[in-house]
Length: 463
Image (cartoon, rainbow, N blue to C red; front, side):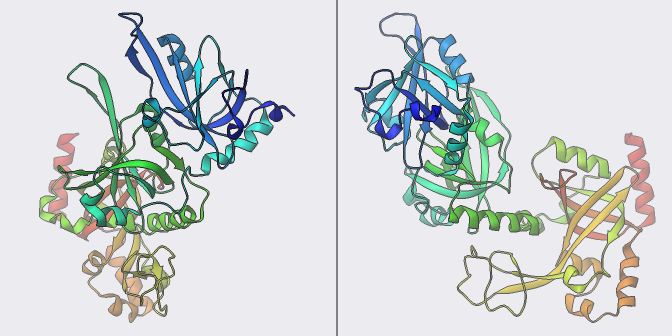
């Protein structure tokens, strides 16, 4: 079988002549150039990558050469690809030189690749690929050796400057920012917001193109990361801690570990329940400060163009308001600590990741509705209308609502359904929603006809 012609990373030794190694790429650096000391005025180019061929063994590979060879080689494969390296030089690691800037590996050696002696190609052998692919989901550090985001925040500046492992879920991926340094070098920066069951938003900063390309492919709220050797620092501008991906960092996407599986379940539940949207606390924005008017299509358009949350007012008809469904769909009880849905008769929260799962249940009950809004430009589906905004809108508490008869609930529903309302909304981009938009109602009341007329004429003048 072809797979047997490869030398395992664990068996590599400098005495081997013409070794052939297969592995899956688990990390990769950007191409860099250095002045060649032997040839004045000429630059040498290099980049490094890390390959793995078994659950416990991985090794760093460094390629050197001219710009054409190195840029071409770097472009020929990505993190997650299975590759074959023919005739690399096996050399001892030098912790004082290049190796201190590379990921820490269990191997005593590293591999050197040059155009004259070595060949790197994508693996075409399906048996080898099938054997290698699961390795991409195994963290390079002990899967239990990590800090939660809560631990990082709690330790604060004590962790400033340290390198640690983090297990967290992806909340959102920011925009790529390009810049030019004072010595005319081009750079880029991308910020990812992480979350877990202890902290709802924590910044991870990427400066390397390779790391940026990797994180740009991730699906927010559905991806868990094990980040080995992230640099932690105190950001005085934000007055808080941040994590940074550096040349030693290896990111494992959706790790195949128990801890990651639990966090994935929490992330999914938190995302579906809208808890992640609540942490921005819409009530922190005074309603009177929201003045921008939008049609439904303008709300959708702005959300597509701008990844940040924004606020606005729309005069729209309430086209869906399920007040006459079963009470359990209208009123929900959630754990006060992690916002998981629970029932009143529970002794403690059933979410395994809840920070208070060993303590007596502390829960709050409130309206938890999804409403649709429609105007002449379209419909905004599944906007959340929750307590206390829902109580103010409907003019009744949850206790009062549960004591209403079916007819009274239907009458309450028709007070709003197909009525033109003045709706204050917070709009958040959402990859889970078909429209790409998620809306939160901050206030809703039947609109004054005179105000609607004024608004519509102002809108027509703008068109």
